[in-house]
Amino acid sequence: MSTSPKKVVVIGAGPVGSLAALYFSHANWEVELYELRGDLRLPENLSLNFSKSINLALSDRGIDGLRNVGDNEVLLKKVLEETIPMHGRMIHSGKPSDKGMSQGYDVHGRFIRSADRWKLNVQILDALAERGNVKMIFNHGLRKMDLDAGEVEFENTKTKESVTVHTDLVVGADGAHSATRRLLQKNVQMYYEQTYIDTLWQEYHIPPHPITGDFQLSPNHLHIWPKQTYMFIAIPSADKTFTCTLFMSPSLFAGLGKSREKHLAFFKKNFEDVIPLVGEDALFDQFMRNPRLPLISVKCDPYHYKDRAIIIGDAAHAMVPFYGQGMNAGLEDVRVLFDHLALHPGDLAAALASYSKHRRPDSHCINDLAMRNYIEMRASVTSRAYLARKWVEEMLYAYIPWLGVRTMYSMVSFSSLRYSEVVERVRRQKLWMDTIAGGVVLAGVLGVGFVGLRGKTGVVGTARAVWRALREG
Image (cartoon, rainbow, N blue to C red):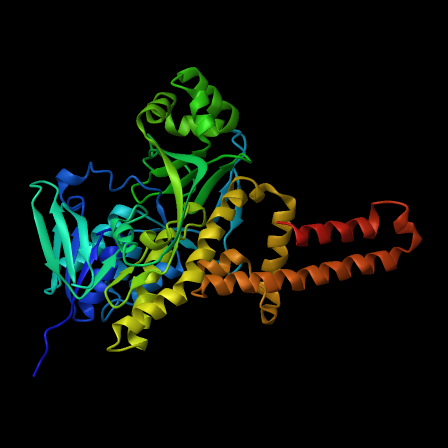
């Protein structure tokens, strides 16, 4: 005698929620996907600000999440066809005469990919539309949850009618300001931490070259104009444009006011080479027209309630965008969740509890790393100490791989090591390298004897420089 499939209600039809729905569909659950906004695949909804987000940097974790759904890699292949490889950062001084300094992401040539969030989302929704056990319901906002009764209430945002849905499981993937998380807190004694950093972001746009129609900058780099306390970045898009973002404190934005002269003077001083790429009129128009939006970091624990509900993606761990891991971590959430469902077949409560316990330290680690990477991107990338340490780590990884030394970036972006394990490995690696650095200093002192005590140049100075480079950065 066959039993009816379990039913899951997924809240949030962004990339993470849509991918979760697709996983559950392939696991033979009855799936209903609810989204507060309209269907972004429809032309009338293109203006609903779906695409107004920093371009995604798709790396191995996100790719693994897309790879592990279904019986083949059709979805992954479609997604990758629409991405642009980025082999490293291009660091710009802002001077028109300076063409930039390339910093490769990986000594073995591995790369991340620029992905359009809207296109990625549409591709997953299209894959869902082909599934017979999936219903997608748009323009419905979450209002109430009675999890023990398995009841979820939504409101139709157009008609204002209430709809009550019965389900075995609720999956909240409804973003940093998650209604699912807020209602879950009524059932769970949840640790919750929300942080807004003293930085706003504003989007700009570099069009294709007006004559050739080609990219105006190298398409295979993430371009950064670091200015110590603020920065401008540009990420390539498949239509030969660049989506750009100015990250800056509210006070600096406010200081520019609505003055065209102040705005242009600011760009001439800091990002002069950007002006001809965008155009003076377009640059000021975008400054006045595009919103300046906050950056939020969210940590919480636990992520589940009994066998009834789980939150994933930004609903569980929204992070600032400076490590390019927000979406990757969310897509990885889905894969890891299903790993735990497979470890506890038939025991949903144990699976959700296991996932929540396992994922929390990793989520908290990547949130912290994302915060720290803002300093690296806006300042450290021009530091000699940072560059020296990066070079040493990459050379050891390339030529003495059995030592196990790798840059943190390569472990985060080009592996599926747990984020918490990456942090622990880097801690041990730093201790080991600091010991070597100390040995270099000692050897230098012994080698030059009293001569080294009389000056800061020569072997001692070199040893000290290496030691500082290894310890910093």
